[in-house]
Image (cartoon, rainbow over all chains, first blue to last red; front, side, top):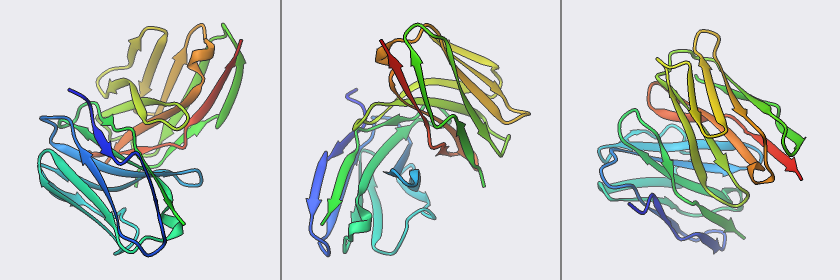
Length: 112
Length: 111
């Protein structure tokens, strides 16, 4: 398996624009996680899914953030409208049940 | 709410030295603990997963220990090399599922 695949790797957008980040988990993994990493706050859990169902979205900072998992092989994290304080690296991770979690390479988002 | 603390925040050692990175967590009701490595500008690479029933897990020059009762884990790196320079992150599950991370220890090994 190619591992967890995220796209795009880098995104630069203007404030107010919609941003969509994408993730393809490892095949067969039933958990998918979205994290955000900044220098100040480290890695923060945003939301996670189990069998495509959102389980805990308490980490989503505002209503401007939304995430979907329409099927077992694809998830999106959308920010609308984007703001400069959303600039961070966004990671997607997946795993099977209570086993080892694997991370994608991340999407570096810059909102100007 | 699970909280994870890693000490020290940064560490510089000469090549060849053995070293220990520390991780502590507040909720001992965990089923495993995972150590990751992150190189600058890169994603997280899983190093070791230690189950709650285990006390130690080894991979090459790395050895992780887990003491659930005291809420502590250590990552031991033997004979450090410049290629070991990276940030090391400890993560434990919160409410049994999603991983909660410490802020990491940034290691620099000089040749």
